[in-house]
Length: 520
Ligand SMILES: [Zn+2]
Image (cartoon, rainbow, N blue to C red; front, side, top):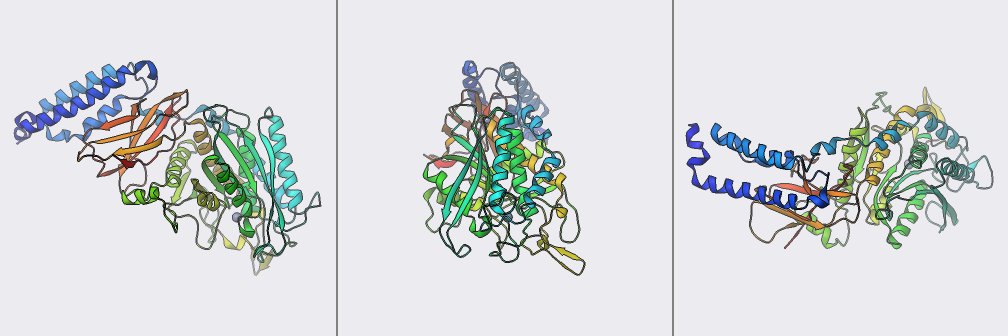
């Protein structure tokens, strides 16, 4: 009988409901007290109240009780809405600067870059360096000159450097070899965010069947002129605009000989204590056609590692595992962010996140970044045709072997470039991830209290708490909680869901989420 389920007929339930609603009200009052700092931001929209109220088994109550809840919700919303005009919708908005940037990404430029890189014959790391037209030396000089041109065309803010070093002899280089990364850095425009950097790479070296063959034509159109072309096109269009944080575009070398260039740069970044907040390598993003001829232009794979298989595991990783957070490594949070952002900006494109560092038997330039402790991801086409990678140019029957530009889909590469640029642009406009994010675990309670350290950005609006089922891959429930550093969600138990906290600025740009570690 409906009457028996009436909350008014159950004193315990009434007390709980009162406590619960008092909790919501108390936090609302706290938020209202902070109006001056908050002004115009979206800390606590009606969505929060609706969600909180919806979590109570609303349906079990009588019509009278429901109408009381609804009336209270209406009242709370009326109080809150003039102050907190925006709501959760902010997370679905698209930033105009990012939209414009993506619209300038050109398949024609990408095609021209790939054909130019192929024209150097081979870009093997041990190939000749004296020629102006052939070998890896000519290739890197050309990449440098292109970066310099983008810099001139955009007011000179893009800083082009050659990160040069000698790789000592190893299994794939019998002699010491000069390895050069071509680096274009776009410093962030916000002083508080400038030391935070996002790195995007492709490798410009190439190979054929024998990794030690330094003279045979190695067009490397897909592997990895496609990635380099994406990086260069992003540098060209992003350098024209201001981003709060620093963007670093790198064409690396020595990948095929053993990840030389990326290892050198990642180690240097670690030694210098640089704040590399995220990294994406684009490696083999050139073809939409699978080995069986199927064409798929709507997907890109994003490889994202969980907990690294470390010999000596630091306590932070242990705590992550101990609390069921093995799927919430910084790389996985970056992947979630990349997927949701890119799919919002690039219609029809699905980012297929793969919970794995890389494909079997293969490696990539994100690995040294992961090893250095940075969140790093790998972007790769949906289905590789291995006849077109690491192969001598030849025909076998009707089949053409070799990594030729004719197997590239330049429109597809442009789409993957937009996926990258959407994510990198959104990261570089957003505040830093909140620091010291913790979930309070000092007493038994069915509510959840999260706390963190305040961000430094002057345009910070506040924070968003996200949660999802422990078995869910993506965030399911975002709520804005205002410019506070501690928040209690009544009657939502940390035992049952996974939480994350992200920082949001006044334009609605949000950082990736951070998994909270337990604290007393
Ligand atoms: Zn590659």
